[in-house]
Amino acid sequence: MVAILGIETSCDETAVAVLDGRSVLSHEVLSQKEHSSFGGVVPEIAARAHSDFLHVLVSKAMGSAGLEFSDLSAIAVTSGPGLVGSLIVGVMLAKAIAYVTRKPIIAVNHLEAHALVARMIYTDLEFPFLILIISGGHCQFLIAHDVGRYTKLGESVDDSLGETFDKVARMLGLGYPGGPEVENCALKGDAHRFPFPRALKSKPGCNFSFSGLKTAVRYAIAREGRLDNQAVYDVCASFQQCVSEILVSRIANAMAAAKASDSSISKIVVSGGVAANNFLRGSIHKCANTLGFDAVFPPQELCTDNGIMVGWAGLENLRSGNFSSLGLIPRARWPLGCL
Image 1 (cartoon, one colour):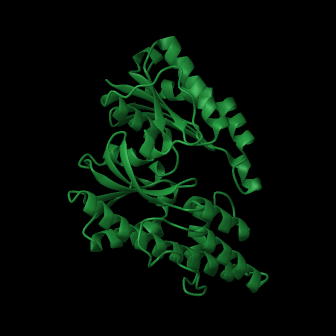
Image 2 (image 1 turned 90 degrees about the vertical axis):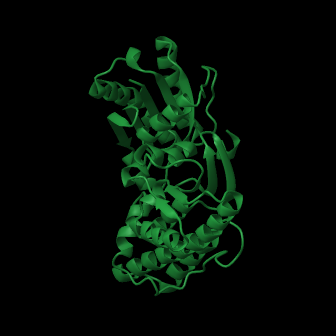
Image 3 (image 1 turned 120 degrees about the horizontal axis):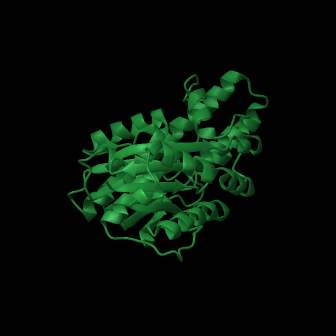
């Protein structure tokens, strides 16, 4: 048995999992509902909630797995990037467990956890492959050469895609998190009513820009005045269609760049919270197939922040001999190309 305890507290999800290889022995997630009234994550509230509940979830996960701490092979903990106050809570508890049990501790990069979790599900997913991470805090293309070895091809030059979804939802008076709210409303809308701009769509390179789209949505709402339900649905559908076209255009460029770097690359892994969007999944699958790539998505429950992906990234790093010391410190910024 190679049992790994995975702890995730980088933002507003408190999550803990216990893995034995690819087998998930237990998984506990506590989503913080209190941020909804603020339209976004309040760092202090997030950190306090982690402090109040993380130890409870760890005890529950270990109990559900039927293991003692002495049975663990290692403790994996998200150490960045993320909200420092939230990261500190997870890192300090992981350090305490590692110190008392004398088990190895592994600092997990949150982005690497998103990038690697698909390998837990798809046993034929070998390095190298192309990655698109689209989440609340990040939007970037990378080539994964191996565990801990990544080359960045492009990223958002302004807002992340998840943040853009949240802000559009807030403009429309929808709930938080905004991604599922916008996706559900878009199902009932006209995707061609509002001609939002497709930033960088026909430009070379692999970077993104979403600030102009966000501003265009704000102006469209202002022009319409008071929105009825159908207008809200149409804004959501038009916005989502625009995002889809931007992603597809950038993916085509990233695939070409990846092939130029290594002709053996034939798969793109799409992960992060926004990757749970069914409409975007369909568009990306179609694009990838047209260009001779396989699009690989983790199950939707593993796209949003979770302890399973942290445990799996810990296991991958354990197998690669990548350990941390008890002196590890959380990092608000930790680019994936700098592991």
